[in-house]
Amino acid sequence: MTTRSELDRKFIAAVERLGRALRVARQAVATNHKISLLQLQLLERLADGTPRRVGELANEIDVTQPTASDALSVLIKKGFVERHPDETDRRASVLALTTSGQKLAETITADLAPLLTDNRDSSDEDQATALRVTLEEIGRLQQNGVITINRSCLTCQHYRPPDKTSAAHCELLNEQLQPADLRVDCPDHTKTRH
Ligand code: SF4
Picture 1 (cartoon, rainbow, N blue to C red):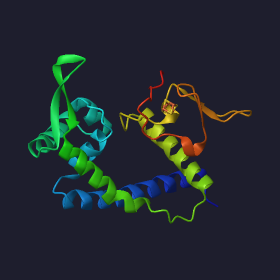
Picture 2 (cartoon, rainbow, N blue to C red):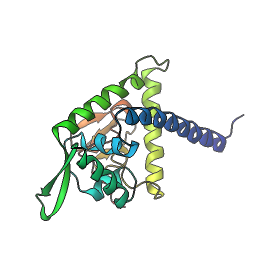
Picture 3 (cartoon, rainbow, N blue to C red):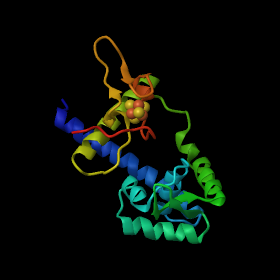
Picture 4 (cartoon, protein in one colour):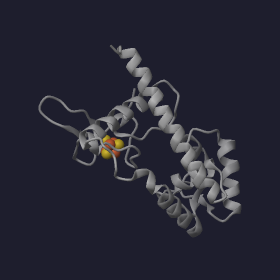
């Protein structure tokens, strides 16, 4: 009989294995486009159209600011990223994708699409439960200081968990949140106060 602690270890081992497999696939796509895996991650982050400072990008992908800065310098040289003055502080600058950067980000998304093929055996309900449990684990790792940025529903001030009478709810968007609706990286996320 598997104990709870064994189950927890197996869960983490399985997530790690999945992470390694995805990393291999993403590295292959990055190499194909003659960029590093870190540069690919930066392009993906900026593809949402929100310009960010170097420090914000570094926190989002859990690397140091100098590491992110070096990778961004290469992307700027290659013409995929450009600097703009930060409208909230003219002494600072933010980074955004150029038109070629946007095109490359779209190609990368298309290249990675086969990883999402709809051929799984699990039910929608199982998949949604897996999503919720994984987000709980990510929240736990953030609480323990392992990661810095986590913009998922379960760590958001606007999230109201389910109770006996109602489903989970987003107070900001005034929407019900079934497990499948939980967001992994929400632009409206507001960190919970502790
Ligand atoms: S604002 Fe976004 S992250 Fe927060 S609860 Fe609503 S949908 Fe989830």
